[in-house]
Image (cartoon, rainbow, N blue to C red):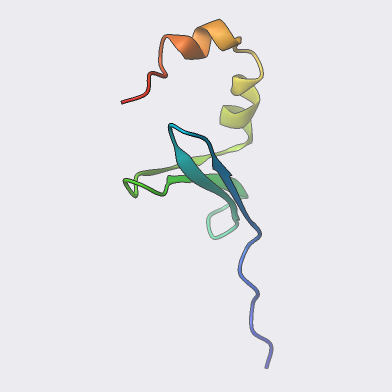
Length: 68
């Protein structure tokens, strides 16, 4: 009997946020799970959603991201 190992975990932090990123393979296909470690809020992103981030510039993010 083998036990499944936990998914690799990456923690990113700066003075405004701390998030963890995991590969979630529990659904129909692999997705990224991004979780805010301060609030517990999370989002699952599939390959198309992650790819769409590559089409955005830093200016696009500036309108959506403001430290709270």
